[in-house]
Amino acid sequence: MKKILKGLFAFLFLVLLSGCAKDYKEITSTKFMDTLKAQEGYLLNTHTPIYDSYIEKSIGASGDNVQFLFFVFDSEQSAKKYVKNNYKDFSGYKYKDYGDYIEVKNTKGKYFRLIQINKTVISGSSDNKSEKKEINNIFKKLGY
Image (cartoon, rainbow, N blue to C red):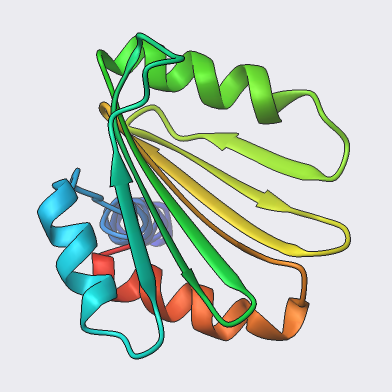
């Protein structure tokens, strides 16, 4: 009887843990812009870069001591490659590939957070770690 109860408990525990996985969805540039326009003090700058053919669209948003970047790549592979090449093996960054998305945070100095989902990459950064709450608040409003 104890073995059955232990087995059921282990099964229930695994089911509960599987429900804890984050299910992030890719957002559009419109949602990114609308979210930051709704925040006081952010200036938005949109352009299509001509220097990188694999980036289809980029948007920058800056506020007091905080900057956000939003990129749409030509493919998910290009987005993953960009994040991997710029953050994976560099000291100061904590790189985690969850399969459906990649998340990068810094471990030293300024506060930095990046999420790559499908063809999009969104990052928020500040030279002041005290802005961590503001950056995480914007990510939360974006659905992350």
